[in-house]
Image 1 (cartoon, rainbow, N blue to C red):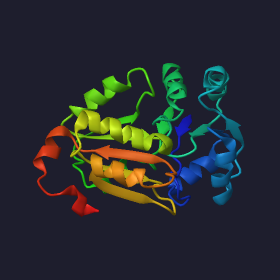
Image 2 (spheres, one colour):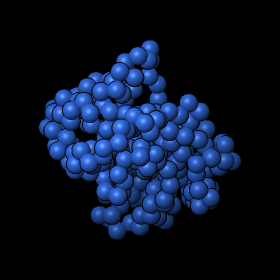
Image 3 (tube, rainbow, N blue to C red):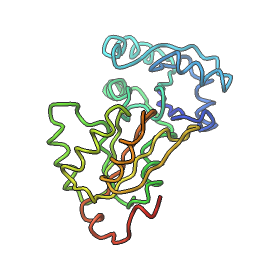
Image 4 (cartoon, rainbow, N blue to C red):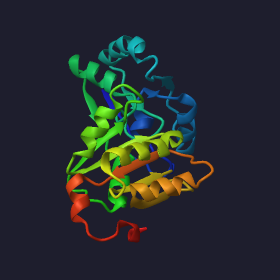
Length: 235
């Protein structure tokens, strides 16, 4: 059995009782970064052996992991934060296990997508999760596609590229498109900024340095037109 176990995106208490139990019971924990994961495991007194499994070695390590799983070893796959395979390692090993008829179970738990969406105040009944945009090739094509969506869409972005990303969104969506930037979700310096794309650019350009993980939530084309109330009044 391979368990996909979500881990906290910031606050170490944001982990389920079931996840803690599974991490204690499995034979091996596969971690994106063992140094990061050791902090979480130490906090919850989990002493299961750790093994590195990340984007740079997963193609090489997966065949041996499959053999161990077939032999009866139970494993839990975790990433540095959030749910495995959501803009993180996990998909490759999961797909390989499915192809080999090895049982896979994903536990419910932490992810940055849903808290950012719900906290944005934008329509959440239907939405599109884009994740990280391509850095170069295909980026403009994806931005054009997103700008025409009639549902709320969600992006992940680096703090170093935040302003540039907002400027590119303005080019395709217009200055008045409503949006929300969530930074450092669940952490001590958590920040949520709701406004038009234009005002968000002004806000973040005025900051000397932006730190932390970034989630950008943008109103869909039609919902943005329909909302007559100034979004800036929400915060």
